[in-house]
Image 1 (cartoon, chains in turn cyan, blue):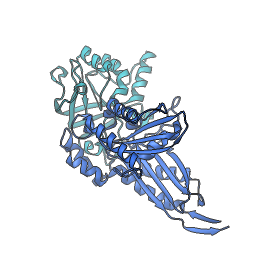
Image 2: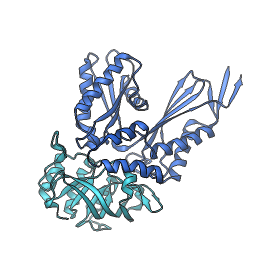
Image 3: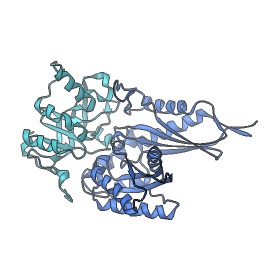
Image 4: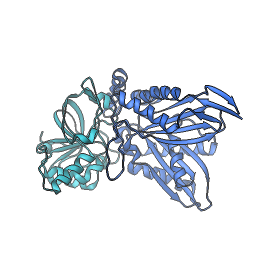
Length: 167
Length: 282
C-alpha cells in the first residue's frame, strides 16, 4: 500500500496484515523504549489497528476499532518505528493531522460496533506479545477485504474536519 | 410486617439470559433504524445483526462494563448480597461466551484485567413495590468516556441547558458510535445527576417523559442534535441521535447540575422483573 496515493473519503477493502494494539500495549512500548530495551516485535511497514478482540469462537474473533483520539499521544512513536498507517474510529486531534502530513502516513476508520460482521473478514489471529494484558495484548491478524475509509490522508487533510461533507 | 423473599438463583438465571441477549441482539427499534440507514458501511452494520444472532459472537467487541440499577421493595430480602448475585451473573455470561473481558482491577497502578468482566457497577434504589426490577446497561468504554457533568448557575435559562447538551454532542458525539441515545440528569447533587443521566439511558427508546414540560425539552434537544448531521458512525450520513431522555430531581438553591451520558447506536440494555418466591409475616 502506498499511503501517499490515498485521499480522504476514499473507501478501500484491505487484504493483508494488521498489528493490533491499544492503550496499554502502546504504553508498554513507550516504557520499553525509555528503558532502551529491544521491542519483542518489529513495527516497520506495519498497519496498526487500534482494537481489542474478543475471545474466539471456533477460531472466529469479534473485532472492531476503538477511539483513536486516545492514541494520538503515541502516534509519533509509531511513525518513528516505521508504522505506515493506523486504523480506528472517530476524529483525531490536530497533532495526528500534523503527524500524518509530516510523515506522509494515513489514518483509516473501520466500521464501529460491527464486530460480529468483521469477524468474517479475519482469516487468522496470532498473539505476538504482552499476553498478560489479555484483550490489550499485541496480536497479528490476517484480514480479507476489510472495509476502511481514509479519514486523514498523507497531506493532513481530515475527513472529520469537513463540515457537512458527504461521501 | 410482611417480608418478601426473592430467590437469587432466579435473578441469576434470568440475567444470564438477558446479558447474553443484549450483547448479541438489537431491539426492533434499533433494527429498523439500521435498515433505514443507507450511508457508508451500511452493509456491514446490517450484516452484523445477522452474524451476531447466528453465531453468538457479540455485536461489538467492547462487551462493556455492566451497570445495574436495582429497584427493590423495602420489605424484600435476597437470599444472598445483591452485589454477589449480580457479579456472579456477569461472571457466568462472560466466562461462557466469546465476549471480551473489559475490566481492570485498579484504575492507576496495576490495571490488571480481572478476566471475568467483574466487578459490575451496582446502584440500588429502595421502593415500596412488592417486586424487584433490575435494569442494566452494557456500557462500552468509548461512550462512557464522553460522560460529562456541568454545574450550571441556578438562574441558567432553558436555552443555556439545551446549548450545553448540544455543544457537548457537537464536540464529542462522533466518538460515541452514533446515532446516540442521550441520557440527561438534571438536578440533585453532582453525583446524583450523573446517576440520573445513566438511569435515563435505561428508558425505552423514545418513551415520552411523563411531565409534558420535560417531554417538550427532550423533543427540542433531539431536533437540535439531529440538525448537527453527525450521522451514523460520525460519517455525516443519517441521523445523529435516536432519542433523548431526561431524569430530574430536586436540587439546592445554589445549584443546577446537568449530567450527560451516551449510549452507542446498538443501545445494549435490558430489564427484568422478579416476583418474590415466599412471603413471611414477622
